Image 1: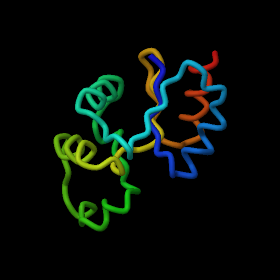
Image 2: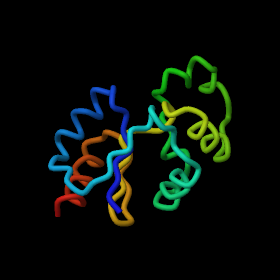
Image 3: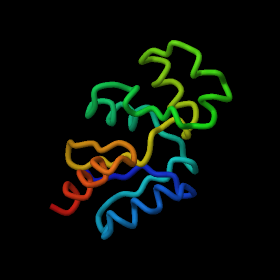
Image 4: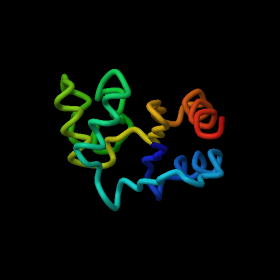
Length: 117
């Protein structure tokens, strides 16, 4: 399976998608128009060490809701990501049992290598 979870309006996601081209045979999953499903989140979680690693602390709602002052656990991270797309660190690239989360250079380079050999 080759799938990229991204936000269409995010400039960083757009830049990374451009860098990952060609995207033939890769499912592009826009997360704002259709929220992340529980099954999709479970699939992502199975490939990483925690829900926290999939969680974006940069989301505006993180501070607006005062979540930065709370002691969040794994169940909290999971529920927040399912509740609102903005809490998913993005993009998330899933390639044949590997996962690359976020926009760090190392993650993008790893995703590109996994997608295009």
